[in-house]
Image (cartoon, rainbow, N blue to C red; front, side):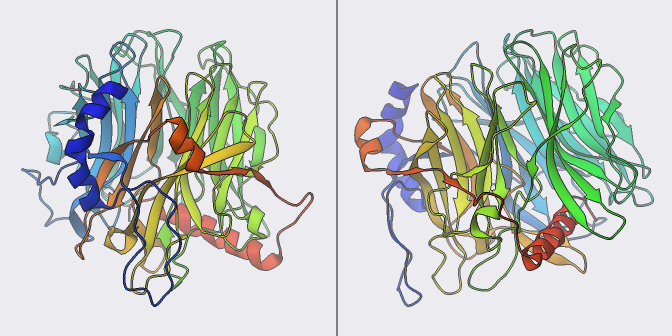
Length: 536
């Protein structure tokens, strides 16, 4: 793929300059600076395109519709043709949850050019009363690809607010057998009315057997109750077994963010966040895991990875909230079977602000290492990490941070990537920015119509050979609310590594316990983030 990227570098230079992409080590700007800090360009391609869907009716819906916004991407590489990349993202976001549709894109030249397609997951993308996609909005797109090259796209499709009279929702899956150029009519893995809301789904093809594909999500049956649900196909997506609960944390508690990974020995590990509401009013958030050795027929009892101690990202200048990946995480498996998890956490700053935490398991998820901080600037607010592991075992983690957010009237945001071959020493390189997060769409974030700047609950990162492929959302220049999804091709040469920022992971103080004020901030963030992930 590298040779293909070299061929398009010159053509990309103008595009990159216009969207603020970069790779370098520019410093922070003082509040009196005339302009944001500059960065040199990396190869970057805009994947999404401004889209106006036909056949949509916004008049009957509540909230603000942000046209020309793209966010929350997913990305896979076709193992039968590594020049074939497939992406999925939300297009035209509503402030009250979800988007008009999920767009899909296919590249046949390693990501240099893209064809935009879609599956009929909502009315805006072709769903109708005679199909499974008869919903007004779609969200939480997720992709996976089987060893045989069959691609599966997942969608949370819904109409109306969660658990409200007249509402409906489903987890839908569509397939593509031609590299993402065309998509099948979706199948509903589960469909509910106002009695339940099926949220935060993910889908995983078994890398050892193309017949098996697994989907997991949380099924809310009340404002605080939500077990983990699971569906599986054993015949390559032709039929799916009836969805069922595989873990229930109790009547007052819920899971969220379920992601299933498959280990080399074909053990399934479902990782999730568990939100527990105690009788004394306390709320805690735990990262937990269960496993199955029989393709999901039976599951173990949960083990705890770590407490999630995120206080959430805010603009340091104004305190304005940013809707990030609080409560969520990213997970990946190394070729040898080591599981890595990354998430936002404030333990390294004694509860002052979030950094990026990393933990690993070498025994199938039964025990986990103590979390370490891996973002390059521990003094800066860092959020929404995404992790992947290359075939050679090198770990990559992308994230946003606000180290350059000192320019008045803006929320200057950068996207970074750290890499490591041992999980202890990291090299940080700059992917993009600074861009103004004020140009992002606003999403409901908490009660009383609290809004937060929003580029997605997650971003995407995968690899092809020795090359990482970050896919992420960023805002566009100017003053209009507008965002797009971009793919980067970070250099991997020795010269680039030599000038990049290298550092060792930061450990939290042993036995340190956050102060009560920080614990209160964590509980408030859990409740706000929990509220944010339901359409209202």
